[in-house]
Length: 268
Figure 1 (cartoon, helix red, strand yellow):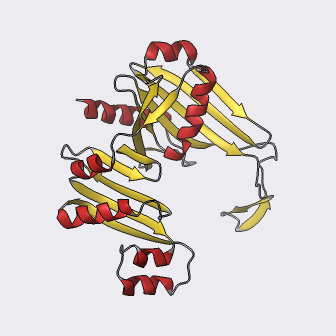
Figure 2: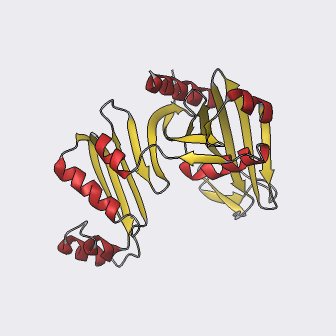
Figure 3: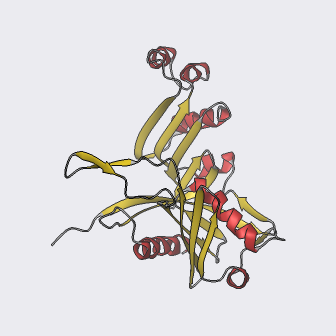
């Protein structure tokens, strides 16, 4: 029997408010009924598939660009190039998944950079309302609640690592020797308990955050719930593994079943 293929997805969660109040499912069902919605121009298309289940709004959406389009593709079976079957007026939308939990007014999304696309969709159907994302923590709360570390990833101009004190002068000079315009430092802690030394390191990163190109800090709180800080701000984090087909596309049903199950566990 062929083993089912699975891939990982990481969802980040933030509060979503409408006119400074938590979201209500009745309001959304009236203004944004179940169905498909599109937003496109001459070069880009966004496709949103929306469905309600219990107290959740499930959103599977994709975004694709007409170009650039390579006129040729490489065939791994023949080891040769051949004409690209995708026409110039066709796009291949990339998958993004999201849910709104109306019990908590939480938005969970698999790509935090796509939050803006969702907010723009909501604004089209709630034109007179103010839709605002509110972060889960501030820096002090994040540090106080962080009990274990999973990963720290920092990108910066190489000499900044030394200037900021994030790395020793010798190690920074070694990195500078590669003459890269941007350097990325990736540290894995594998669920390590935090101590005063590690907390001080996290604090030093926050002090330098405006000078760094990008930051990702992930860990867990005392209840083993995921915490995340990245360039988009503070959020909660849920990791899942879901089924993919032979084209490496996720099964929407499997993604939602696993995600909603984990969200329910967080709420208990």
